Image 1 (cartoon, rainbow, N blue to C red):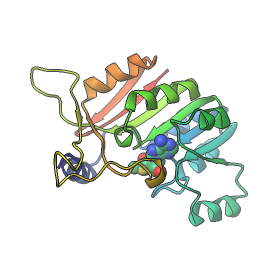
Image 2 (image 1 turned 90 degrees about the vertical axis):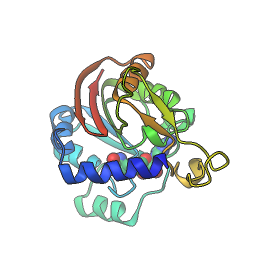
Image 3 (image 1 turned 120 degrees about the horizontal axis):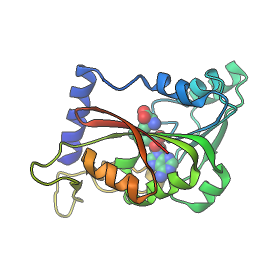
Image 4 (image 1 turned 30 degrees about the vertical axis):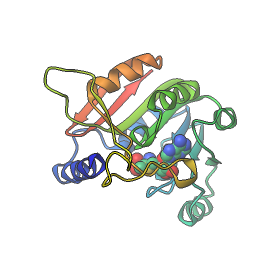
Length: 210
Ligand SMILES: C[S@@+](CC[C@H](N)C(=O)[O-])C[C@H]1O[C@@H](n2cnc3c(N)ncnc32)[C@H](O)[C@@H]1O
């Protein structure tokens, strides 16, 4: 049910438009002359943000995803004669973090609420971040009178209507977590990030952190 609510919220957000800077603009502002990695670079975007960073003059660009490179991604690499490096792997796996290595700028959008252990996800992002983290995530509304709410999407046993939890082999499909903006701040601090900028729209937050 939470998944459906969040999906509906994302549709409303898409209709309302976004007060966040367009992601290509945000990336262009930070990526020029620096190493850049997009964690979760493939599904529906086919490496588009990697190419945006390359266009912005990033010193080097890496894309990471648990799913494999799509034909569209490969075709665009060939068309541009792109130098983007793609690493297929699970961010939570230390071997993936080692293969990717630290980058000046880390872009990660649409991943955190799909992760069964979001603090571990942030910790891994911290290991990759040598300078700036650009993190975008769907969120839920603050709970009146109780900041820092993080709601777990119930599994199918408790809630027959909920999507079953899926792991890395199935691309972490469902929404595990409903994260309030204040919870996100706390989680980022726990992982060692300090937030420099926050762009909020209903049900979505983009942060610039270091
Ligand atoms: C909801 S899509 C978001 C795609 C894109 N970043 C965007 O914002 O539109 C999540 C992407 O992250 C990838 N992903 C999810 N969990 C991951 C993990 N633990 N390690 C690597 N990639 C992951 C998925 O395979 C998928 O490509």
